[in-house]
Structure formats: C-alpha cells, structure tokens
Length: 276
Image 1 (cartoon, rainbow, N blue to C red):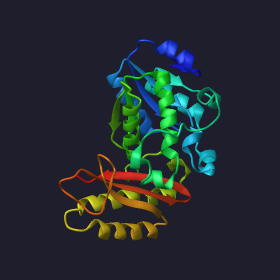
Image 2 (spheres, one colour):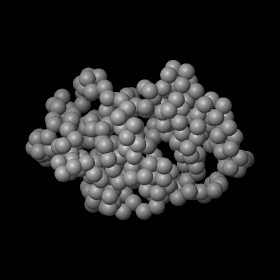
Image 3 (cartoon, rainbow, N blue to C red):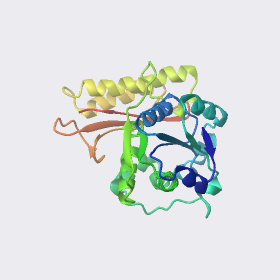
Image 4 (cartoon, rainbow, N blue to C red):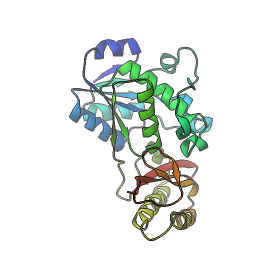
C-alpha cells in the first residue's frame, strides 16, 4: 500500500487508473473495511482517505475528541489490501485557511434533521468531499447508509459539480446486538454499548408496527423507552427516503425512512431504518 500526503502526488499516481474511493475520518472499523472490500471487488485500484475535516464540526469539543487511531488504521488498511492511503495535512486540504465554501445548493435538505441540529455541517461535508473528488477523480465513491442524510447530500453535490463519479451506498453494518457500527462507539462504556442497542430495537419496533399504529404513537413510546436507558433523543423522525422531506405518518405508497439522533454518555449517536 502506498501512503500519499499531497494532492499533486496522488493525481500523478492515479492518472488514468480506474479507482474506487472510500473517504473516512479515520478510527477505522468493520464498516469502513466493508466499504473498502466492496471497492476492491469492483475496481482495479482502491483509495482510502483519512482526514478529520474541521469544517464539518459545528461543535469544537466534538472535533477535539474525535477518535484518532492512525497507526491502527494503517495496519487495518494493509491487512485488507487497500492500494492507496491518502493522508493529507490540514494545510494541504485548506491552503487558504479553514473555511467552508458555503454556497453548495442543497435546498431544504441541509436545514432538516442533521442539518438543523448541526448548522453548517453539510456545507463542510460538501467542501471536503468536493476537494477529495478533485484529488482522487474516482470512478466510484463508496459510502455507508448509516449516514443516510449525508449520502443524499453527497448525491446532490456530485450532480452540482457535474462529476462522473458514481455513488455506491452500502448497507449499515451492525454489532450482534443491532448497534450500528460507528467510530463514536469507542467512546461508550461497555454498559453504554449494551444500552445503545435499544436504538436499533426501537427502529425495528417502529418498522414492524407501521401497519397498525400511527408514527406519533410509536415515536413517543420509543422516546420513553430510550430515556429509561439514559438515551436522550435529539430527533426521531419520519421522512421521504428519496428527498428527505419530513412526513407525519406512514404511507405505503412512499419509500420512507425513520431517522434517529440522540445522546448517551455524552456521545452523539445516529441511526436509521427504511420502512417501505
């Protein structure tokens, strides 16, 4: 595996290569490795990037405490046979200072759910993904469905910048308990990890009962159950799975998704589940 730290060197090495790309912020886990394996299965060359992007954090404390395990990350990438690791510095990615471009036309998608509770987050995401796409020029981009809203935002970004890159969204990987695998789970205690599995159980309960109860009833029951396990709900919402417009109740004619965000042990957790 080649480790590359500059944009120019990366462009030079990848010139005319068919590439699959997995952008990450490090603290790699089985979910990331699954994305890399999918890329390896479908592309002659796979690039993984590790860069903790400062412009997508609206909470400075969250940025400071984001887990950094670079030595372990490199070992994992070697073990799975990743071809290239792009490991840029902040000054390499933001030579003119750390700020978002802030004019990506994301519409209402950046004002609801994650966008509402994390102002500026998606402009920061689009800024760094745009920069990375220009560095890698990938044929295929691999993302995990756990970050459901982010996947839709990046789809809009690729359309806006008229990129030829194809987006590949891969299913969420989970622990045996149902807990969605996430870098943030490392900040939970062992008891916390057990409690956090109730998020998946609640989402499953909503899906299984969507034909005989209103969403509002199921939502309120879930919020109370989660609170009993010390999980404070930030939002538990129903939306159109195509454009993420909020919906009040279940509709069998519409592809829908339930989206969750909340806090346990001062760790922010997100998850989602498709309904139809």
